[in-house]
Amino acid sequence: MSNTASGLPIGRGLLYLIVAGAAWGTAGAAASLVYRASDLGPVALSFWRCAAGLVLLLAVRLPRPRVRPATPVGAPAVREPLGRKALRAGATGIGLAVFQTAYFAAVEETGLAVATVVTLGAGPVLIALGARLTLGERLGLGGVAAVAGALAGLAVLVLGGGGTSVRPWGVLLALVSAAGYCVMALLTRWWGRDGGVDASGTTAWTFAVASLCLLPFGLAEGLAPTTAQPALILGLLAYIAAVPTALAYALYFAGAAVVRSATVSVIMLLEPVSAAVLAVLLLGEQLTAATVLGTLLMLGSVAGLAVAEARGGIVLEREREAVRV
Image (cartoon, rainbow, N blue to C red; front, side):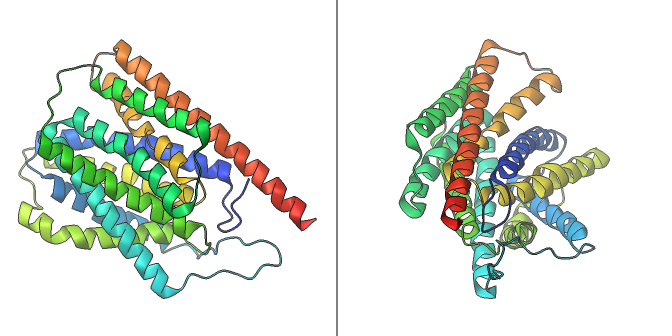
């Protein structure tokens, strides 16, 4: 069950993606608390998220020796050319900056429910189409059913409470966010198939590029928040940088390089599930029938796709072993 290019088992890649999706869901609650306690804007928040996450990644990465990706026995070591590494970091960094900032802006413009539905609803569709056109990946009938179930669960989860307002500009920003995520996911999978990709290095360089892209816009918006609770804001920013950013994106880039793009997009729908659970457990929101039904639909779809992906990895590995014999 391993991807021969990167050496990461597909089962472990699925686990990485599940943890990343759950961690991403905590960022929304933390960001909401930041907005309540300060005047920090979405661009500035995205900048601090990327910049502080980069510092944490470098702090973890520098003391340890570099580990090269595993290669099959007898095969030559694969090293990524410097030019392709720079292109990959630049493209994924811009995609990350667009994805994060446009989503935060959409939440501010049209509300959390509508922004989440459009961004996370359009994401799997765009990625499935993009993966079919650019990577030749087929979703299959089971995959189509899983995507449909996940999207239905997402709609029930975030719209079940009603009271939502749709603003065209906010919807457009959410679609831009979905497109940024789609580009980032497809490029990660594309370059991951060729091998020689260092997941932690990819994350660090991506954050560096995203931080540079966001810096001038963050300066224009205001990087220093006005708040009566500076300790709370610093703690929240530190958490956002550490868990749903540095940790989650490192796991995401590692897992997305070995798992099919459409599967990745559906597993990442765990983000609103974890956000809904946090809203009930930590923020005191009421547990409704829509929350339960939406969560079960999405978790069932994620589980189904994960099992199918793992089985596909076993079959692929057996076929390769038969060819070697």
